[in-house]
Image 1 (tube, rainbow, N blue to C red):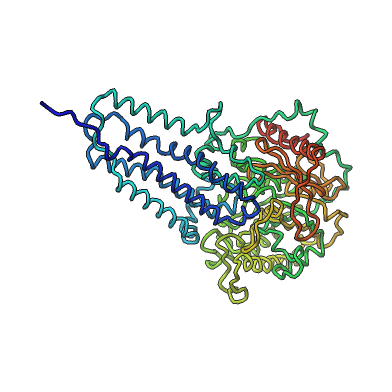
Image 2 (cartoon, rainbow, N blue to C red; image 1 turned 180 degrees about the vertical axis):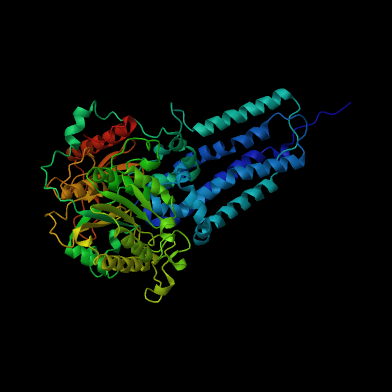
Length: 635
């Protein structure tokens, strides 16, 4: 009589063991994330850190079961008879294949988080060409990322070999189906991880008094998998803090400005890659990194309380040139709303007879700046391709990674501008002050390596700008040109204590005209990138056909503002207070630091906090609903 084959109990815990192994690795990654970014979390109370580790297990369960679902289905499928050993090994290979890319993403955030202040999401696909082109140097420079990934994969493979999948199954088909149903139910419950009407989502992590701690509770895979709306085009909620536009408009109305006489000067805006205010000598007595920039600051108008709209380049272009602040998790020009009608500085200048051009020394298409420049009205684009066809181009001008070194590229810009009819407007994005921080070999002796590689690049940048102005000084258009020096975002100096939310966005703004007195301005007033276009147009005496409500001319007496979004929290900065707000953590009020070395200090004033939070909510509602309805500008 044939015997009934009993279930293989030696491998009964094989699938749970694999899932527990991945959970264990995610916890190890969280420890690494904490230590790699210790300065970010140093100010957080230890209770929040401990809670984030415990709360983070829930997010880990969601990610592990979501990624493992195909493997769980295969392992518990009611296969007839035995599962051959070689097929079970293929199941394990499939399991490793599922998890390896997410191990890599989780480990990549050990380093990448410093640059963005948030976990990687699907927006990374927007810059896939840049990642592909820079993959070699990035893997070498950040070699610990593939190392931790390989160690994670090796550990998981060891677990798979140590506890093989069971070959035998319950004899009864009913028993097999019950096991499959139980496994499926457990998987669904773990993926939801909540008995509320909505499953556990990324915003639920940001419940801490120290907002960045939410990123510690998260893991990168869940942030990545739940960000599919970024690509699908459904990423903004419709806000109803106010019942109508009329109700909140008085809180955000920039007001009509009395016109200045038309003064159609040329405009050249130099946007320096990653130049934090902490690198500029004019803002840091005793620093000698930027002697030329410091001279410009003394000769022109230097705004000392100026902020970036975000922490990456693709937040800078819409803010600087279209007055759109960085109030979303992804940059607006690479979001679902990139098809909205944006009205930029370039559009207004073209309508007033300007020739407009955008210069960027990187590979054409890098960061999508060629496309973004058109969206803000800069008609012509000059990148690495155009530089290489320039008679003055040399092979050694290429930095080997991103594009053209600053000094030769700025020489190319002067040569091109010399052929432009006036008036013209040009934007110049520099490049060299970017990881991996190379400088031309001929300057390696003059600028020796330093503990902070960025500092050496800043010295080279300052020399390059000095050469640019020296060459331009002899051109007929120079004396008729307003020059603007600013940055796209910040870079934290190596060894610097973790910056607060203001220091994370603190960049310089310098206005300089070689032959004309600039209008009087309060250079201590708070401003941000969204103010640049209104300031330039105000100086030129141009009344735009459409106006941003998110920026004000810095030449006017209106109170200064800055706004951005960091770690899921909105912030509104004014010269006396800073208010933050999120739907999950509510609002907080801080005193604005008015002296060197001062930091944000929270204030317990519920009435004032609510007053300022109402203004911030008005801006957020106008931004979100304006993008949803394609009605962002005032006419």
